[in-house]
Amino acid sequence: MAGRMFDERQAGKRLGGDDHPISSRTMQRWRQQGVGPAFVRLGTLIRYRDCDLEEFIEGRMAISTADADRGERS
Image (cartoon, rainbow, N blue to C red; front, side, top):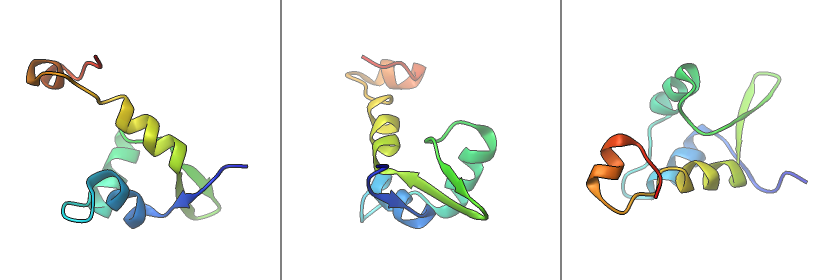
């Protein structure tokens, strides 16, 4: 089972939090550029699995601003 799935708006909120959600437009741009979280296409619907959002977040962990600037994971 895929677990919980989110639409663009919900996924943006999951990534950025209630106070600073990632916009739907940013989610779309990330998809087009291939830099965002993995997604599922169901016909015309785009959905994000919770496990893929978690993996996306974990892949951006940093312990210093130098790591974050280089996009490296520590």
